[in-house]
Every structure is written in structure tokens, then in C-alpha cells.
Length: 337
Ligand SMILES: [Zn+2]
Ligand SMILES: [Zn+2]
Image (cartoon, rainbow, N blue to C red; front, side):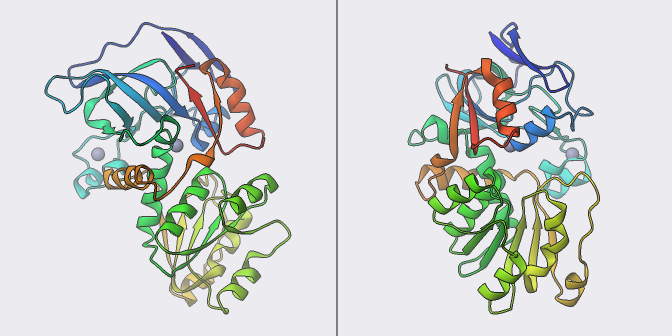
């Protein structure tokens, strides 16, 4: 079968490998779609070399079909599934608190351990969730980032009538905006890339573009109060510097982007307005269930986010395009091609 290898130094190569043998508690999957994620671009640039094995296979946004599953499991040949790509110990403090996705010994499949950028993949059967037949293959591949968004919006407790500002209109920022709007919030998105600004406007969002001051825009929009919830999804230190200044009294600042370096933040509004700042990473199982419901019911149409399908052989080019600021939201690797 075809597989992909992360060689390091910005190089992915495609090669042959034997089809994996599933263990007693594992299912063998025929992979159909794998999304290229922002964290995959971090891997591509070497930022996660301390976690990703040399010559490892990445890919954690996977939609697949079951080839074989243990007889005692709820899955059988032909089932359409997505993979919740986390393994946890079950006994550490985080796991005992119910935060298994923040396990102190967490392994993310496709980062720390073998992922889905290959024709076949053996996965623990308890990591599988069924995909309704109503959901097309391409949208099913968006369930994983959608679960990130439902988790983020849920943790920030966005409610009907809230004003919500999202800094960063990439795939995750856009999905957060879609989920918050579906909950009845009034959402605006700050984005500097002109292609993405146009894309967000086509989805019906009001954008705050380059040359505009988000703090001033929010002041005018909210009668000087500030928004109920702000999401930091841009990863930009310039945004972190002002992110507390756009929020109302008792409002919420939610940090989604990966800030690998310490960054100055204005803590005076944190104190003066008694703000709450929270981080959001990965997802609960409940967030996955909500994501599947929102997409399968048609409550949210995320299909416009799929910009391009590429065969596995073009993985290297896909990584370079996604990183190089070309006009794309989500690139999906189509393993059936
Ligand atoms: Zn992802
Ligand atoms: Zn644990």
C-alpha cells in the first residue's frame, strides 16, 4: 500500500509499506480523506520535531471506511467512520478529572504516533465514531476541525444574542464563526488576507480588514461596551497585545491559536473589567457528537471550506501551497485517487 514519510527539513515522501495488521482491539481502515491542518504545517516547518518520529506518518483529520473490526465491536466492514485521534492513560489526574484529551501522557495519532496519510490504517476501535450516510466524504473530513470549533464555542459559553469577535479567519476561525452564528450570536471576523476576507464575506460574515482598527470598530459596534466573547485564532503577537481591550465587563477571552513564544498581553483590562481568559485545545467526545450533528443535519454547511483535493503523491506540494499563502482554506488528501 502507499504510505507517506515525514523525512524532516520540510520533506514528505511517498513510498510502499505493508498493510498494517490490526491488533485485538483495533479496526483496519481504508482511508478516504485526510485534511491538511494548521498543526500539520507546524510539523512541516519542523516545530514539532520533538514529538513527530523521523520517517513517521502524520495526518489526524481522517475520514475512512472500515475494512475489518473486532467481532465484539459496534463496527463492521463498510462502515463510514471518523477517528478521534487521541490516546490517553486513563489514570493520571487529567484523565480522572474527565479531561482525557489533556492527559499528561497524551498521544495524538498523526503527531506523536502513526496517522492516516496512508491507504490503510489500524486504529483502536474505541477511537472511531460513525458518520451518517447523509454526509458526503469531503464534509466528513471536516468533522475533526469542526469538533475543535464546537469545543471552543462550548467552553466559551457563547449564547444567543452575544456579540462575538474572531481574530483569524483560517479554517478553525471560520468554523468557530459558523458555530457561534448557528448558536445565535452576532459574529465578526478580523482577517488580513484579502482572499480570505472575500471568502468570509461570501459566507455572510462582516469582516474587519487590514487598515481597520479592531478596537475602534468594536467600540462603535457595541456602544463602547466591548464584545461578550473574543476568540484569538490568529497566532499573531500584535493581536494578543490588544485582545483584552475589545471585551465587555465580565467577558471572555478564548485562546485557540498555538503561541509557542511568550507574548505581551495587556492585563489591565483583565483586572479592571474582571475578564475571564481560557484556553481551548482539542475536544471532548461530546464536541465530536455535536460536530457530526451540526454537519449531518445541514445546520451548518461547511462544504465551501474544501478548496482542493489532491492525491497522496502531491502531499509535499499541498503542504507548500497551504503554507505559502495561496488562496486555499482546506486542502484534502484524497486517498481514493
Ligand atoms: Zn487538525
Ligand atoms: Zn492520563
